[in-house]
Length: 402
Image (tube, rainbow, N blue to C red):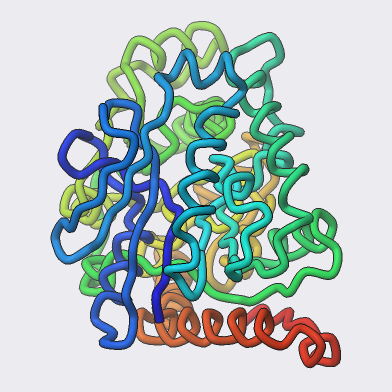
């Protein structure tokens, strides 16, 4: 089976960033299958050749030259899409299936009209996130509006989707009526499965927030909730992701938080897998007050590693967390978020029970062998439906949630 991925893999020889861990984990798993030949296509603005093809660490890569960022935006992404589409029209027949990862980066526009069957895995949906973006006259809103246009324009032309949660399934049902919806979870890094739940009894409990200083991830709500927690208990907050102490101090002053000093909040930046696991072991909970999310990796990895989670009940999060059983859900009100965090601090038995139940459920949900098996089954189902569309019309559209 010859599979072509369109996925946000950075150029391995030029980029200093890393691909999303769920992509590398699944790519490596597929690479172990003797009957699967995987190729990954993406674009790169630094290369001089129109197309680069090479192998790296056992994976085949194709990079199409894209315009520089400013030119890419000024041309509304049309040049990048056109170059990729032209390459695919010439070479798509090499492959049995094209797997598009995410709808945020206009890959779906580049595959429009191809004869090869296409599967799109939903990550997040820009058109849904845009509705909750708490800013107006910004470049981010302009770019998300443009990405939302391509999403709404081209998703109705995709016939097969791989979804994770009740939320993304419902969104795709609206955006692409009649499409076949397959179910699969993301594959997590294997190191999180080897983590053991540590005994936590620190003198000053540590709360972990992994959204940096992003408003959409609930940075402000996290700090406000932390301020309320510190009214009753000593605690410290660790931020992971793009964050700076100056931003934290500025918001503490702006919001008039009276129980938090900047020294109570530590900005760790981006963390390696080993560093994250160490933080999980040192923390009393993950606080995830996001405005919108599908199946956030931070929540999934925390559950697999045995860290209790307090999260906002938005998007697909309740497909990951059953309230009072595998975590605690809240709205975005900082008082309510603080109440749930304080419950974990005041009731060690509750924290231990939630962590244990979540770990069992999450390790089953993200079992690598099951995800690999489902991926291959979905590939075969998409190919079969493409080869015999009349027979597929009599088959009910799968909508499993397990």
